Image (cartoon, rainbow, N blue to C red; front, side, top):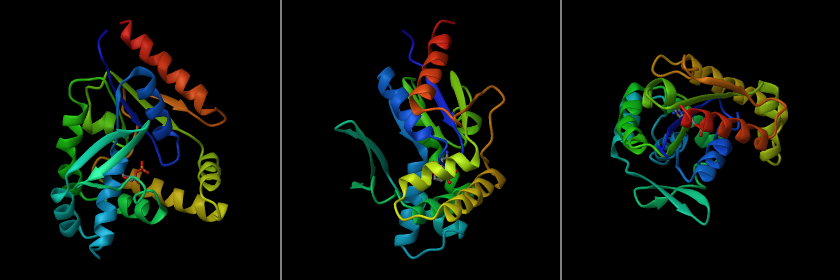
Length: 220
Ligand code: DC
């Protein structure tokens, strides 16, 4: 059977990472988390003591990094310059830096070719903000996962022990505004994407819906 290229985009905490990983696992496809690449640039920017809003410094950092994705005991590991940064990139500080560096066209173009190479050949699920619109415009299936801000805030709050719901909601709203409002490759639904609203639905339900769409496409 033909191996598809599947693009999944959506805002922070829409569930796209979990859904993309589960769909990839179920199909035996590779999963590529492009947000992790922006997070790695954010992490290296903070470590270097550079300013995430500085386009020159961050573009230089993005261009110097080598990315690898590795499956280990059923988990996707993100390897950057031979260091496993999977855990180090999962916090709000790095997420904020990632969103800030992702505004710069130089940073985006430094990551674009690697992302396209990873998507070439099919048999891949790639998630992010601009996969269906910019990175893989010819993807066989494009999904735009969305959920109400309140629900996304509740999900993230539950994942972050000790967090304050109002603060989490405010941070998410700021990230939405930054990711959707930037000039280069903003977060938006591709015209030919299927919008899937995850509000009030379990992860299992959403995975089933996406797999249903995959089977429909394969039958064409
Ligand atoms: O999906 P995430 O929260 O791990 O992504 C972190 C940030 O990276 C997000 O706020 C915006 C940026 N990003 C992007 O601009 N384009 C992508 N394809 C993926 C992520």
